[in-house]
Image 1 (spheres, helix red, strand yellow):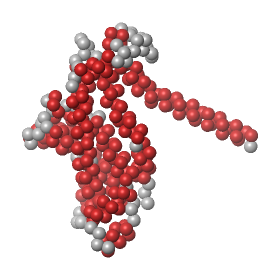
Image 2 (cartoon, rainbow, N blue to C red):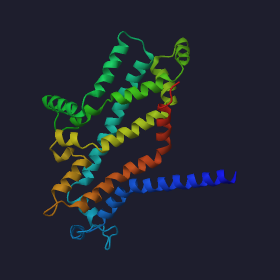
Image 3 (cartoon, rainbow, N blue to C red):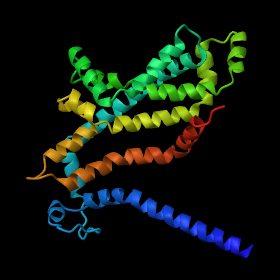
Image 4 (tube, rainbow, N blue to C red):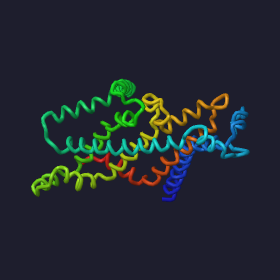
Length: 281
């Protein structure tokens, strides 16, 4: 018994050492980002060998991040873009998932198979097609052009459909016998039961919108519609003779804070949603 207990203790120590080491590897880029953001431009460029501690930390880079470009405006644009896109997408995918999970119509399985096959198309081809379509519609340099290609997701429809199908069908039949409409059943029964997954999808979509870089750069060249990703690129291009890495890192820190807070606040719901989506039957 004593040797078994000793082996268990040693295994636990090794496990926690490994997890701690892996945690340091994961967290190191965040530490380096914050460290670079508090180094002056001259000090950063004079370091031939990178230093892991800032000798003279400064917050000047954070001021430069907001003064060299209109980062506050980009923040507002990104919030509007993320909220509008996420709300519209939730409506679209919820109705689509309900239709595939509970309604019966001709060709349902074929249509859903075609939907899933679209996930195999490379994202680069989709971006090119969306760019041509939005340009031909005259929607470049507009919020509509930014939002429209992102208001649906085949993966989220599939994920939500799988969750809806886990709800016993007898509930749906009983509700229909009582005269409950499909929409009322969806709002009062299915969505509350699948709330963890809905929260997870919402947070993932907000993060996706917040980190969106390629599409905003393609579809708009008007600063009035720039997002925070465009702001980082502008700071990069407005370096003092070369790339202003410390100011870029300061902007990245500021931009990352809302997402970190969002994850910390809803981490339990995210894990519950992921766990629920991985359970079938």
